[in-house]
Amino acid sequence: MDFSSRMTIVLLFMLVVTVAVWLFVYPAWRRKRLDARAFPAHWEKIVRQRLPFYDRMPAKMKLALQNRITHFVAGKRFEGCAGQPIDDNVRVSIAAQACLLILNRSGDYYSDLHSILVYPTGFLVRHGDVDDHGLVSHGEQALAGESWNNGRIVLSWEDVQRGASDFSDGYNVVLHEFAHQLDHQSGATNGAPLLASRVAYQQWAEVFNDEFTRLRERAQNVDSHPLWVEEVLDFYGATEPAEFFAVATETFYEKPAQLLEQHPQLFEQLRLYYGVDPREWL
Image (cartoon, rainbow, N blue to C red; front, side, top):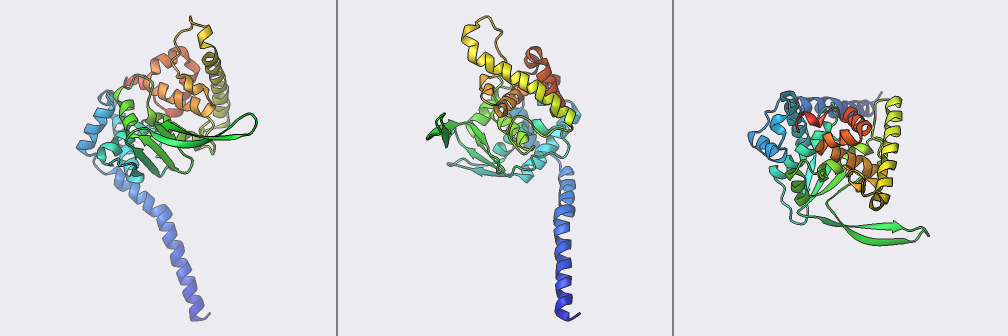
């Protein structure tokens, strides 16, 4: 074997080692380093402001939330749009709410998500709609948030603050859009997130299909049934299964007692999936 061939083998070996270190050794070292990092006091002050129930959470859960926030802020890129400044208040406010969804989901830090784009207020997006005849029309729509399948989420800072200001109204744009991110982990944003087993999928499908159909019927006939109990789920969830899952998630975290009363099977599926019961701290 000549010198050139030996050098090629050596370089290939070094490349393999470098890639292995980058893929396996560095992430583990980085996680260990982040796990050992003390949670900044001014971050905890922001969390208390954004999550009014924070001090009522069990100590173990508070530590888990702090750990998730630390990893989230370190691993995601925040981008200010239309003049929106990005500081610790923005980062931690969004992270604190988003990490409620992954409190008991070990190792899940929204791995497919890379960037959070933040606008000062609602932002305009242009979508194409196809009618029954196949004709495409384009129009602008003002949104508070949007979750994309390419590793990005767009949020209105005004609506982020609004959602955190009242954790009992069932509206929270961060919970809503990050639920979409979890939904997409299965490969499609269709209201069926990644679950642990075939049995879990079967139970999820039965409950969610029934509940989605029920909500859609109520949304379509609400004016003709004035004696119905006020629906705890926002009727926006009746538009499609993906929105139903996101709306159900908002309701689960902000109105858990009412959701359990009106939709006990739906509540149980969400409790099993998220691994928490928000009634413990609300």
